[in-house]
Image (cartoon, rainbow, N blue to C red; front, top):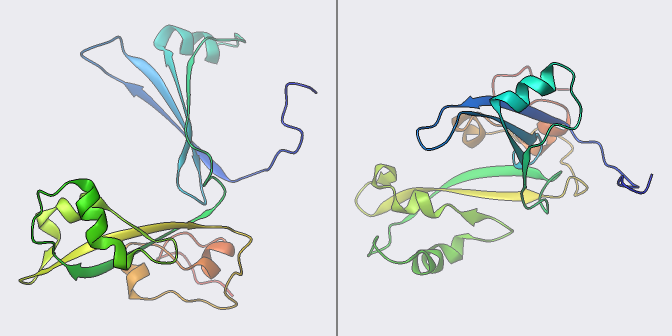
Length: 177
Protein backbone atom coordinates (compact mmCIF):
# COMPACT_ATOMS: atom_id res chain seq x y z
CA UNK A 1 0.00 0.00 0.00
CA UNK A 2 3.01 2.31 0.46
CA UNK A 3 3.20 3.34 -3.22
CA UNK A 4 -0.42 4.47 -3.45
CA UNK A 5 -2.20 7.60 -2.29
CA UNK A 6 -3.87 6.73 1.01
CA UNK A 7 -6.96 8.95 0.59
CA UNK A 8 -7.76 8.92 -3.12
CA UNK A 9 -10.44 11.26 -4.45
CA UNK A 10 -12.58 10.08 -7.35
CA UNK A 11 -13.22 12.68 -10.05
CA UNK A 12 -14.97 12.58 -13.41
CA UNK A 13 -12.70 13.15 -16.36
CA UNK A 14 -11.80 12.48 -19.95
CA UNK A 15 -8.88 10.63 -21.48
CA UNK A 16 -7.89 12.05 -24.86
CA UNK A 17 -5.59 9.97 -27.08
CA UNK A 18 -3.92 11.41 -30.18
CA UNK A 19 -1.36 10.27 -32.70
CA UNK A 20 0.96 13.22 -33.22
CA UNK A 21 2.74 13.64 -36.57
CA UNK A 22 5.91 15.66 -36.38
CA UNK A 23 8.59 16.97 -38.73
CA UNK A 24 11.15 17.42 -35.94
CA UNK A 25 10.87 14.08 -34.14
CA UNK A 26 9.38 10.62 -34.68
CA UNK A 27 5.59 10.36 -34.54
CA UNK A 28 4.28 9.56 -31.07
CA UNK A 29 1.11 8.84 -29.09
CA UNK A 30 -0.09 11.53 -26.71
CA UNK A 31 -2.51 10.92 -23.81
CA UNK A 32 -4.14 13.83 -21.96
CA UNK A 33 -6.03 13.27 -18.71
CA UNK A 34 -8.57 16.09 -18.30
CA UNK A 35 -10.50 16.89 -15.11
CA UNK A 36 -14.14 17.47 -16.08
CA UNK A 37 -15.02 20.04 -13.41
CA UNK A 38 -12.00 22.33 -13.77
CA UNK A 39 -11.51 21.58 -17.49
CA UNK A 40 -7.77 21.42 -16.84
CA UNK A 41 -5.25 18.94 -18.20
CA UNK A 42 -4.00 17.02 -15.16
CA UNK A 43 -1.22 15.14 -16.89
CA UNK A 44 0.17 14.36 -20.30
CA UNK A 45 1.70 11.01 -21.23
CA UNK A 46 3.87 10.62 -24.33
CA UNK A 47 5.13 7.37 -25.83
CA UNK A 48 6.50 6.14 -29.12
CA UNK A 49 4.33 4.31 -31.64
CA UNK A 50 6.22 1.07 -30.88
CA UNK A 51 5.69 1.48 -27.11
CA UNK A 52 1.99 2.13 -27.73
CA UNK A 53 1.85 -1.07 -29.78
CA UNK A 54 3.37 -2.97 -26.86
CA UNK A 55 0.85 -1.37 -24.49
CA UNK A 56 -2.28 -2.30 -26.44
CA UNK A 57 -1.02 -5.82 -27.12
CA UNK A 58 -0.87 -6.58 -23.39
CA UNK A 59 2.67 -5.71 -22.37
CA UNK A 60 2.98 -4.20 -18.92
CA UNK A 61 5.49 -1.61 -17.70
CA UNK A 62 5.79 0.26 -20.99
CA UNK A 63 8.19 3.24 -20.76
CA UNK A 64 6.71 6.69 -21.30
CA UNK A 65 7.29 10.37 -20.61
CA UNK A 66 4.91 11.87 -18.00
CA UNK A 67 4.25 15.58 -17.65
CA UNK A 68 2.27 16.44 -14.49
CA UNK A 69 0.72 19.90 -14.40
CA UNK A 70 -0.22 22.13 -11.46
CA UNK A 71 -2.97 20.23 -9.64
CA UNK A 72 -4.02 22.98 -7.22
CA UNK A 73 -7.24 23.68 -9.18
CA UNK A 74 -8.07 20.08 -10.10
CA UNK A 75 -11.50 19.13 -8.78
CA UNK A 76 -12.59 22.76 -8.60
CA UNK A 77 -15.41 24.15 -10.74
CA UNK A 78 -14.30 26.23 -13.75
CA UNK A 79 -16.37 29.35 -14.45
CA UNK A 80 -16.08 31.76 -17.37
CA UNK A 81 -17.61 35.14 -18.13
CA UNK A 82 -17.06 37.88 -20.69
CA UNK A 83 -17.00 41.60 -19.87
CA UNK A 84 -16.72 44.66 -22.10
CA UNK A 85 -14.06 46.94 -20.64
CA UNK A 86 -12.26 50.09 -21.86
CA UNK A 87 -9.44 49.34 -24.29
CA UNK A 88 -5.95 50.20 -22.97
CA UNK A 89 -4.22 53.11 -24.71
CA UNK A 90 -1.10 51.09 -25.59
CA UNK A 91 -1.80 47.51 -26.68
CA UNK A 92 1.92 46.83 -27.13
CA UNK A 93 2.41 47.20 -23.37
CA UNK A 94 4.01 44.40 -21.40
CA UNK A 95 1.83 41.69 -19.88
CA UNK A 96 2.39 43.27 -16.45
CA UNK A 97 1.08 46.66 -17.66
CA UNK A 98 -1.94 45.01 -19.30
CA UNK A 99 -2.60 43.02 -16.11
CA UNK A 100 -2.55 46.33 -14.18
CA UNK A 101 -5.12 47.75 -16.65
CA UNK A 102 -7.61 44.92 -15.99
CA UNK A 103 -6.97 44.74 -12.23
CA UNK A 104 -10.20 46.64 -11.34
CA UNK A 105 -12.23 43.88 -13.04
CA UNK A 106 -10.29 41.01 -11.48
CA UNK A 107 -12.39 40.63 -8.34
CA UNK A 108 -13.71 37.56 -6.51
CA UNK A 109 -11.05 35.33 -8.06
CA UNK A 110 -11.76 36.29 -11.69
CA UNK A 111 -8.63 36.46 -13.89
CA UNK A 112 -8.64 38.22 -17.27
CA UNK A 113 -7.24 36.66 -20.42
CA UNK A 114 -4.24 38.72 -21.56
CA UNK A 115 -4.57 37.04 -24.98
CA UNK A 116 -8.05 38.58 -25.30
CA UNK A 117 -6.69 42.05 -24.52
CA UNK A 118 -4.15 41.74 -27.34
CA UNK A 119 -6.74 40.45 -29.84
CA UNK A 120 -8.05 43.31 -32.01
CA UNK A 121 -10.90 41.07 -33.23
CA UNK A 122 -12.50 41.50 -29.78
CA UNK A 123 -12.72 45.29 -29.99
CA UNK A 124 -16.21 46.66 -29.40
CA UNK A 125 -17.15 50.12 -30.61
CA UNK A 126 -14.66 52.95 -30.50
CA UNK A 127 -12.97 52.34 -27.15
CA UNK A 128 -14.17 49.01 -25.75
CA UNK A 129 -13.04 45.43 -25.91
CA UNK A 130 -14.54 42.07 -24.99
CA UNK A 131 -12.36 40.21 -22.48
CA UNK A 132 -12.86 36.72 -21.10
CA UNK A 133 -12.45 36.11 -17.39
CA UNK A 134 -11.97 32.72 -15.72
CA UNK A 135 -12.00 31.50 -12.16
CA UNK A 136 -12.03 28.20 -10.33
CA UNK A 137 -14.22 27.81 -7.25
CA UNK A 138 -14.27 25.07 -4.67
CA UNK A 139 -17.04 22.55 -5.25
CA UNK A 140 -17.63 22.61 -1.50
CA UNK A 141 -18.70 26.29 -1.73
CA UNK A 142 -22.41 26.90 -1.53
CA UNK A 143 -24.12 25.69 -4.68
CA UNK A 144 -27.08 27.90 -5.66
CA UNK A 145 -30.49 26.38 -4.94
CA UNK A 146 -31.89 27.15 -8.39
CA UNK A 147 -30.76 27.70 -11.98
CA UNK A 148 -28.88 30.95 -12.66
CA UNK A 149 -28.21 30.37 -16.39
CA UNK A 150 -28.44 33.54 -18.48
CA UNK A 151 -27.48 34.85 -21.93
CA UNK A 152 -23.80 34.91 -20.95
CA UNK A 153 -23.91 31.15 -20.42
CA UNK A 154 -25.73 30.67 -23.72
CA UNK A 155 -23.10 32.67 -25.62
CA UNK A 156 -20.28 30.39 -24.43
CA UNK A 157 -22.30 27.12 -24.39
CA UNK A 158 -21.93 26.66 -20.63
CA UNK A 159 -24.22 26.44 -17.59
CA UNK A 160 -24.37 27.88 -14.07
CA UNK A 161 -22.94 26.08 -11.01
CA UNK A 162 -26.39 24.78 -10.01
CA UNK A 163 -26.97 23.09 -13.38
CA UNK A 164 -23.37 21.79 -13.45
CA UNK A 165 -23.85 20.20 -10.01
CA UNK A 166 -26.93 18.41 -11.40
CA UNK A 167 -25.01 16.95 -14.35
CA UNK A 168 -25.89 19.45 -17.09
CA UNK A 169 -22.77 20.52 -19.03
CA UNK A 170 -23.89 22.47 -22.13
CA UNK A 171 -26.50 25.15 -22.82
CA UNK A 172 -28.51 22.82 -25.08
CA UNK A 173 -28.57 19.94 -22.59
CA UNK A 174 -32.03 19.17 -21.13
CA UNK A 175 -33.01 21.37 -18.20
CA UNK A 176 -32.61 19.97 -14.69
CA UNK A 177 -35.12 19.92 -11.86
